[in-house]
Length: 147
Image (cartoon, rainbow, N blue to C red; front, side, top):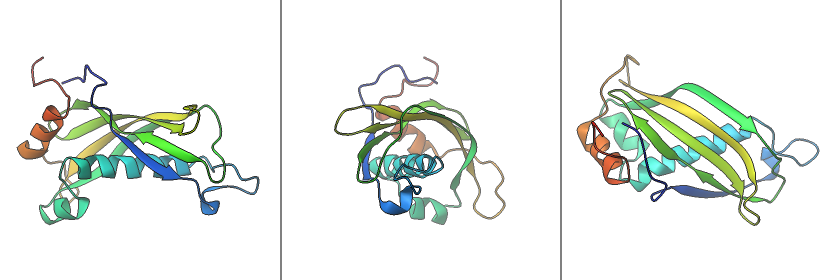
């Protein structure tokens, strides 16, 4: 299923700290991946699903693949807006489209796509996304299955 609407775009605010930057005060490239990971976690939380709760239900989400493009640098003390839009839900995976923008001028800093696989906690073998979670994504703006 594919998302058709930007109406329910989720955004997470965060700040760039000294530890996020290189010697020149510019965000080190890999830290954008951390910011986007946090936004995906908060997206799940906004739907009522904490990562700790999912582990107890023999479910983990692990990054299967990632793609990032860097456009402009973030710097020390910048406030960032990080989106986490689910654009596709499959039986055992989610595809996220994400952007990192500077809050004060809305400049696009980084964008990426991530496929996150649903796996069993101990074996790390694929498992189906629970229907309750799938339904939460549909209610949040994804079209129903088959559309």
